[in-house]
Length: 164
Image 1: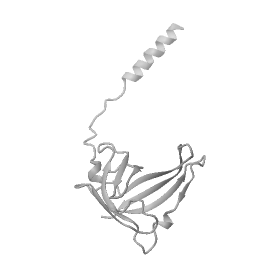
Image 2: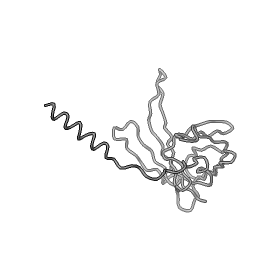
Image 3: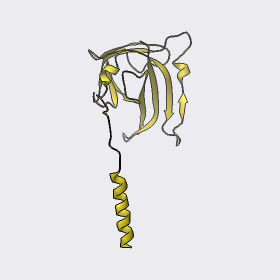
Image 4: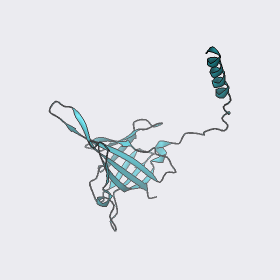
């Protein structure tokens, strides 16, 4: 029995030590702040039911992207971290404009939008990169019971596309 154990250990070591060496470099990480710079517009709007066991997703884009009517447009400035909004059809989840920041500039998981009257966070559904034409945000909504316990009800998935 010991022979088999030694044989398997030796074989495992042999296979493990024969991995090819990595060649090349990954390069510099992309600048997530600079990736936000520019004009964006809503290109899709979906709703995920968090109480449904299969997490059903419904496409509600027809209320936000209409033929002949400009969708909500958001312009982000990376130099002074401001943003402005031109509302379109559907509910505006971006406010009127203000300042923005990431929770972590190097590896962001959410963007925080601050208006003169409100501050709210949108989870990043995708990482912003300068060459990507689409960015996704997720906005969870909760219900609070009498004891103050929050439970998720729906999550809005908002896709915005570069227009500049």
